[in-house]
Length: 160
Image 1 (spheres, helix red, strand yellow):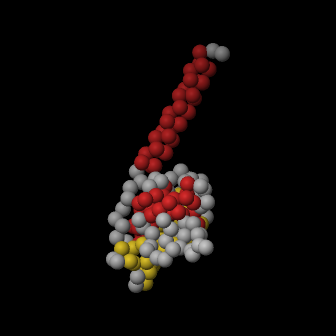
Image 2 (spheres, one colour):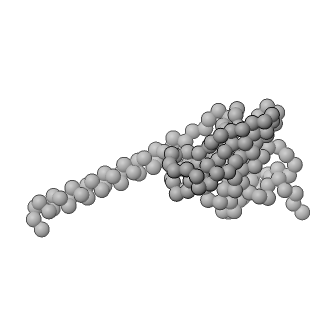
Image 3 (tube, one colour):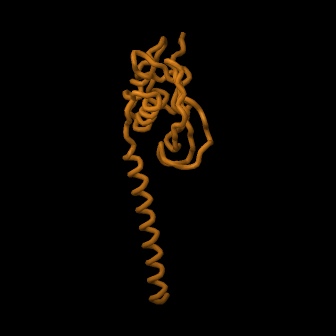
């Protein structure tokens, strides 16, 4: 190898290193920039619930559940996430869409795109289009049901 080839190879490797460092920087800053929002609206409650799950703050996520018969305990709520009984949402992108409210009931559109690194990133749309169901209880919006990845089917069910 001559000197020109060595410099060219070093330049390519240096360029790759810079691109990897930039990609890692973007990845970690996006994860760190996820912040809670005002939870006085159905969309705010839905977003905060998802952020809490993503950050594994199960107590905060649990605080957004509706007070209804057979509500799971905090431990029962955490178990499906810790044991992998729910779908995987850690590598999916989430976007909240249209909110529809009729009296004390609201739905929030939850669009999921799989394969991205963090929730609320922008990207392509349409792999999963589901809805969160919320009810107004004592002046606060509470979650009654969420899409599969963020919910466990046994919650609020009478157990023997």
